Amino acid sequence: MNENEKSSQPLSSREVAPNVPRHRPPIKIMALVLGLVVIASIFVLSKTDRRSIKAYINIPELNETQIAGRAIFNSTCAKCHGIDGTGDTKIGPPLMHPYHRKGSLSDERFLKVIRQGTPEDKWKYGHMPAQIDVSDDDAKKILSFFNALREVNKMGN
Image 1 (tube, rainbow, N blue to C red):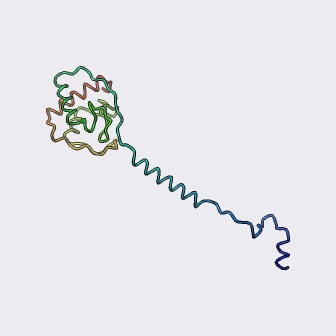
Image 2: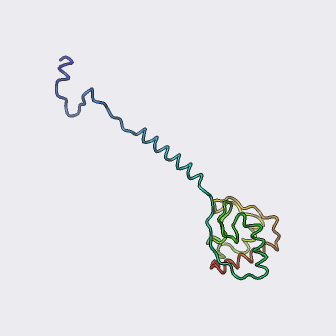
Image 3: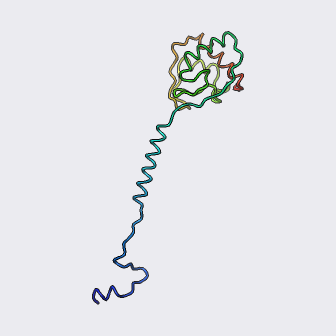
């Protein structure tokens, strides 16, 4: 049989004519597109704003110690934790958050964090440095203010 006779014979159901273009699965293109999507997602997510949530709180009537604690807090701590501990900064979490309930953050632990700082724990903001410029007396005033906020905003337990 010569070449002309072969091409004129009918092909079996499994054979493909030699002049039919063969399609390859687009796996390489799909992998490339998927890779680009993953890279773009990582880039977009890494550039998102690290702003903390903003807490809306009630401010109670404060006694003299709590007023002094509020002034110290807002001059020392607000740059990271927001005015009156409400958050909305890129540096630290809000203190008026369920994570800081009285049962979760005791008075002793609160004072220890002010004095010694804390490593990155459950927040994405990194560690909190020790506040060496805050005296023990000022730390207790801040705690008094913080406890007044926790009480009026029902964060006591």
